[in-house]
Length: 221
Image (cartoon, rainbow, N blue to C red; front, top):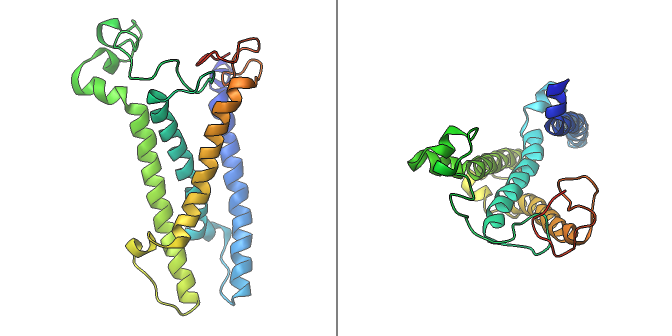
């Protein structure tokens, strides 16, 4: 029970992830088979749909936009500020080793690579951005390949020529799928930064304490 309590935040969202992916797979499967029947093509089983490019593109085009959002948020929060917001610091910049608790300023329970120097400290100092960025690139590539496969399948259904992957990256279809997700992420981050200046959610780490002045920056409840 203590483990569940200590990891409740992550477990809650991973449970929601599994449920939403499961329901998406079922609804997507019905949509796929409905379209197949409408075009006189063969329908497929749910298990076959789970490894289809139709399902893969639908999942990955959302994942890549989410990890792009977090990668940009992490990077922007180093150098940019939003006065009064919980999403940024009071002062921009990388901060000193002392403030970051690196090397000789590291606390006794600090990660080993935070106490080390050289390349190990450098990698660990940027590890969150590296991992988030790598997942974004991997999921974006996955979206491009599954989308390309799906695009060529539709081309064959209409007796039209297929195209290479590099050509697909320049199509309006690919960028429409990509940008419609990107813009929603940018809107979410920008609005959260502004809303957290003036609005409160008592007890949440995403909000300032209820009685904190609007101009207080980087303070959370």
